[in-house]
Image (cartoon, protein in one colour):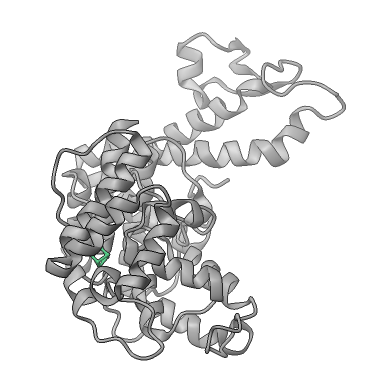
Length: 400
Ligand code: SF4
């Protein structure tokens, strides 16, 4: 549990610094909707130098931007609260219940004595007794005590920073100005990542469950992967980019591919690579997709047009099934997804000959209908498989 007392030291590449900031802002976005699993954030490993870098740069921004200042303090407090919750399940439970068989919440057996000005809000709200200038904080309020202390500390150090005299020359640096722009986008509500819907949150653990929201092209690749544990290069590239665009973090992506490629490949797969033998190559490829290697480009999910036009090699399983599969193949895969909709399947097969997008739209409608028991009275257009996923999630979120 850190209060970010010391700023980070050393050199850092600019692109990593920007990623740190983007990830912290993304985490703030998730915190708006409640709690967040911090293990999904590679730059928020507590008290690591990158974690401190993200905090200190945003602290600097908060000093120059009133709107962001409030948000910054609230989100940093919320972050600390999440960490407190994690810790309470592990260590503090033992500290505060030591020697007792009893409770944790509601426990008043121990008292923490602190100078009253360390917990001003508790003092003001009369939740603690003051004796000789010391506030008697019942152990059950340890979390409020820490949060209050952190709040006071943040306010104080930000005030010092604001009037330090160094801030103006720092803000003249063009690299800092670019980061400032990211923060402005955040405060003005623009997304800091390519996520169109922040309610979506895909990770290594929930990908199997989330796959029911995937469009047919990506469901197909996911099923091939489940069946054979391998995908050829192009399909792996397309699927990785799709996962990245719908919000999977790089560390989860690495976990996902490691888990899959560590398994034996099925006899039907002609790929002989494995994580054990080729792990380094795969790690490089994934880092490259996330803009951390090579040309450091920020790749995004392929468009529907690309997947429909893509020429497939003998080993490729991908592309848009509504364009690339023959009738029998398409019927077979659709039957596994919609065993009770034989008529709709035939309509999709008919329609895809004129326009694969129309067939994909029908697919979307049937999924929506099965999940909500409602008919969708609007025609959808999808620019990419990721766009399909976001639109479906958005509509389902409205229904829930
Ligand atoms: S139309 Fe686009 S989203 Fe739908 S299956 Fe084809 S490529 Fe995927």
